[in-house]
Amino acid sequence: MQFTDIHGLEEIKKSLIQAANADHVAHAQLFVGPEGSANLAMALAFATYLNSESRKSDGSCGTDPATEKMRKYIHPDLHFVFPVSATKNISGKEVVSDSYIKEWRTFITENPYGSVADWSACFGGENKQLNISKEESRNIIRKLSLKAFEGSYKIVLLWMPEYLHPAAANGILKILEEPPAKTIFLLVAHDIEKLLPTIVSRTQIVDVRAFSDAEIVQILTDREGRGRVTEEQYVQFRQVATLADGNLNQALRLLGEVEEDSHQLFRQWMRLCYVRDYTKLVNLTEDFQKIGKEAQKSLLHYGLSMLRETLVMQTVNALQETHVEDIIPVEKALIRLQGDELSFVANFSKVVNFEKIEKMSQLLNEGYYHLERNANPKILFLDISLKIAHMVRKEGR
Image 1 (spheres, rainbow, N blue to C red):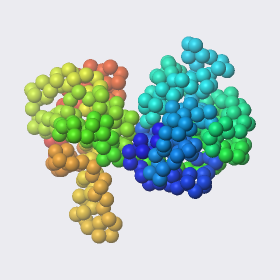
Image 2: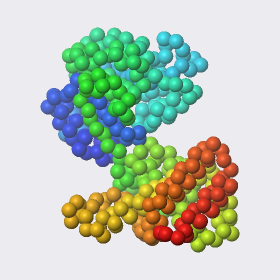
Image 3: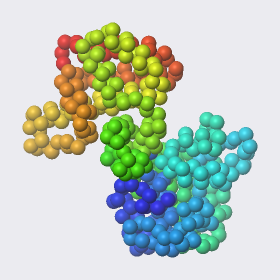
Image 4: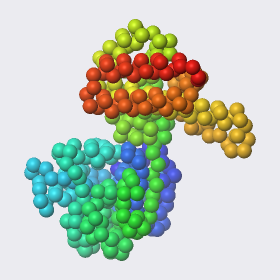
């Protein structure tokens, strides 16, 4: 992984590149970002850049032996620590990162934006509780007692320190605060609140924001190939980006699961609810039943996203009408939609108020919950439809 492999986030790349080139690298850094962000990818790229023998100003590296080894994650001075659990073949004191290194290299090569659940599925964790054991802290201390073999730095990349057993966390405090010379700790986390304050206080925090909708659309477009993306695909990419809400891993998963145009389906659904055409609503719920469980969940997820955008538009419009923006600028960028979706939300916001949006959101959330537990889709969607139909035409906008 190199910086040039990560789309966007130029401000973070620039800061890390400057620190490396100036040899002002903090010995312990905590890359914090939401699930599906580039926090792991950024830490991997930084590790590659630190030990590259042919650094370039744009963050890319040449083809020197060190860079090639870092690219394959087999450099002798790059060590990984990550949460694991026992499997059919591995148990006891063998349940440590080194026992799963082959699977780990495959995982971060194929999906550097993956979740803990994705990782568990990759090595065969069988839904068992993952953790980073005290044995791992002993392994870290033992490995760092040796000098670097080839690289400028000996690097320990610790993914998801939220899973550190308290004994393991306490076991690495001293070496995290005073590591051997030319030793770098790169911790990669989602939730800083779940870390021991003593761990956080010993690190320099690198905030990695979620991807913007535009960045996700660009990434999906590049994956398909420039010049080969149809207008229909581009619309789907925008819808997926809205649904993913900055989570690239979720966007890639949604792209492979969604079988129908969620916007067209949701717009048709809400229109029939508004006009209370119950015959067509029954027929539509039969169509919903045919599209598959993942597409059904995506439709509800998309609906929740549209309700959020409707609420944002109403808020922005209300502030403009009261001239609050003369004192406090109204952030119109909060409205992320374009084209047909923007037109739909503009019209929809005229027939629902905050109370109705809240109740509809609750209905869709409950529907998602029941779908995951194998509720009958036709009955579920018909029930939601009847409640929304009654709600949207109720007196009082």
